[in-house]
Image (cartoon, rainbow, N blue to C red):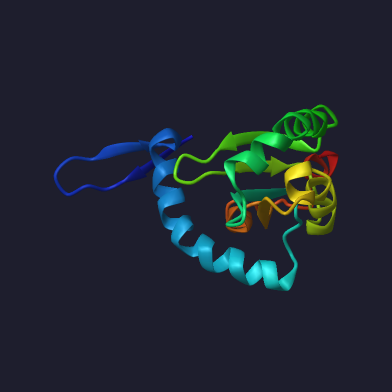
Length: 151
């Protein structure tokens, strides 16, 4: 599909490949406002939870290292159980970042609450619910189509 636009100097074809950055450039400023409004309205489902871990101020290297063995094993168990989708280390501070396969904050809190560093109050998590980018609905008009319902 080609979209043609007029340039006073030179007519040029605007392909979908060239148009996508333009479309997203126009949508993304509205996305922050749209997402904030939809989160409070509840129209976007939570599909993942971002968990940002921070080492507690009371933690010492000795306390953390004494629990690190069981911590790593329990974290791997959460990953193998499908609770952790992705995991990263923070490069700016001591801590870890997980993207969890959770649809509620309570579910994420329960899973992470069983980790030894959390149980010993040596690691705190900030939990942020994530969902689909709702402004994309502006470019997809057939939300209720059979193809959308298959997923």
